[in-house]
Structure formats: structure tokens, C-alpha cells
Image (tube, rainbow, N blue to C red):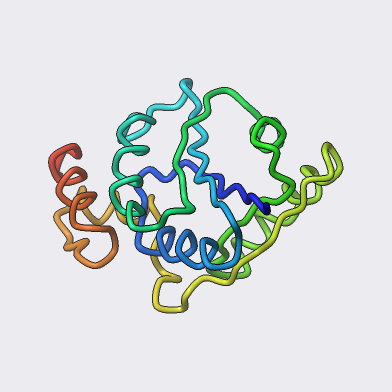
Length: 160
């Protein structure tokens, strides 16, 4: 069985992330969406809330599971899950430039390989941080995140 880990903070999950999860689910036997949580950082949603929001969105995919991991290197998460592969969605050259050194370090540390999946061009402008900024200033985030995430985000964020 080929198990792949899709690591990220997903704070919040976007339609671009969900596209990557669905496409990965068609390529691998099992996809583990690994929410990496650093308790030293204040997120918009708790790790448990992120797990719940993502699980609801991938409930129709029988080979995708969602788990949170705190204070861990992603390669250690991969080892615990017996996964030899990570998958990362890329929106642009900037994402590639950021992800490439990490992929090389992860392979150096543990031989875990990283596969880059080009994002859908319709979603390349969407990032969690931009979604939060737009929402915070009253912009419309419809279509950038799932409806449940939109509702939760608008309830959570202070509006400027």
C-alpha cells in the first residue's frame, strides 16, 4: 500500500488544498492530511477545529484521513505513519522556491521523498493568509474556502 502524507497548517483549509487532497486520493492508496501544529504560534483555528473542518470536506473520500501532530518534524510523522512520500501542492514558482530546500532536507534526514503536484490554475491566487486578510477587511471569500470554513472564519475573525 502506498501511503502519502499531505502536511500543512491548513489554517484555514482552502479550495486549493481540497483539490490537492482529492487529486492525491486518486493517485495513492491512502492520503494522510497531517495538520502540523505549533502551540507556540497562535492560529485562527485550533488543530482540533482544523481536523474537524477538513474531515467534513473529505468525508466522501474513503482513502483520506486527517490527523493533527504537534511539535514534530514532518519526517518523524512520516516515519510513525510508515509513509515514504509527502505530497505538496504548488501554486507558483514562489511555492517551489520555498518547498524545494525543505524537500531536499527531508530526503537527507530520512529518505522521505516529496512529490510536487501542480495546483489548479484557477486556485493559484488563493492562500490561507490572503483569505484571512480579505475576510478580516470585509471582502467576499465565497468560493475560496468551503461554505463551512467561510462561516467559521467569519465568526472567528474580528472585522476591521
